Image (cartoon, rainbow, N blue to C red):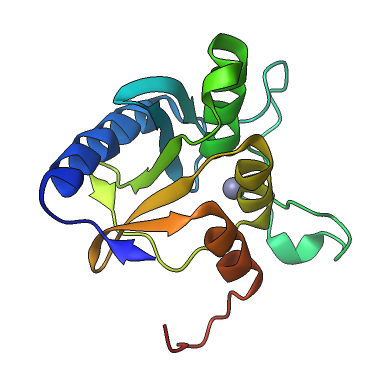
Length: 165
Ligand SMILES: [Zn+2]
């Protein structure tokens, strides 16, 4: 992981703002999220979290403990990152390799909220598989970049307890 500085940081701030505007379309009652995928300074994918197209079933208020441990993803939404990847796969499939993903969650006013440690193995595996180079989060330290393989390893290593970085 690295903390973005200088020109890289100011560019990333613009992408985080763009991801925050995607989050306005979120259909989730729990957490509104947005993501953009960037290749060579151009946004090639945009996404927000909401139930799958064609489904009106929301499960935002169902306690996660209600589901069996084998239920892989206990949220009702397609994650913003997954939607951004689908978007890029439709429009620019050959440009995903080496791209950068920017993810953000927003508050009730649509303002970016700081993310904690990565934990979504669904998104971390998919990002790695489609060739995304790095995942970027707005965190306590600022905008932090994670090479996709490190993001995946850290997601699997997630713990509620503080761990040394
Ligand atoms: Zn996810």
